[in-house]
Image (cartoon, rainbow, N blue to C red; front, side):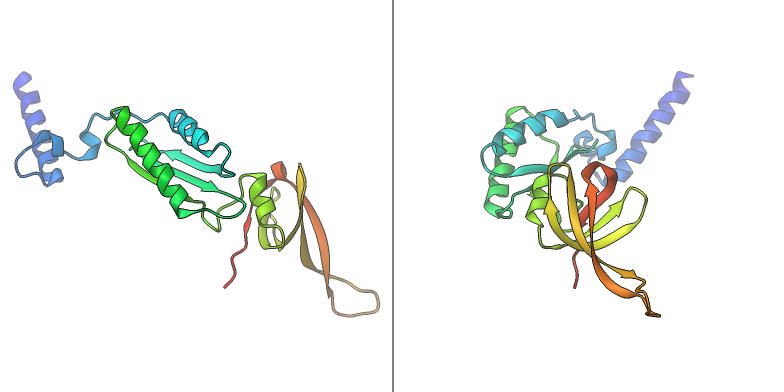
Length: 193
């Protein structure tokens, strides 16, 4: 039995060797799925980022840490995101991860995508007066201009077709619709070309 398993093991090592493109058989160069890696703690990264954002006006919008230690940090600010700030935050995170002895990771720090769904109230406020797309909880999609942002709700002005007495055709009318933040699937900037 042991001879059978040793042949299987040797065959698997050979397959890994072929997959890695590693001509010298160096085990450090085997594919990522073979490596024994330490998962980066998402809470640790979040704490580091939030400490750096305090008092800057920036807000953490997205933080993802994959099983392959791919870290994505997206921030936003009322006045817009400064590239130099992102570079500084990136450099800080690299220093902290290096100090912890964490080497095998990919890090991306940047601004949130222009068409990504809003996550914080600040993003709604930032887009006051702009066209937005809203997908309500019932699955209906609305487009309009963001006109107000309150503590629990926001409102958009949108064009609707309404029947007018004495007319055969419906007329366009501006109607204000109010949505609760927790009663919708998403709201995002409506990018038009």
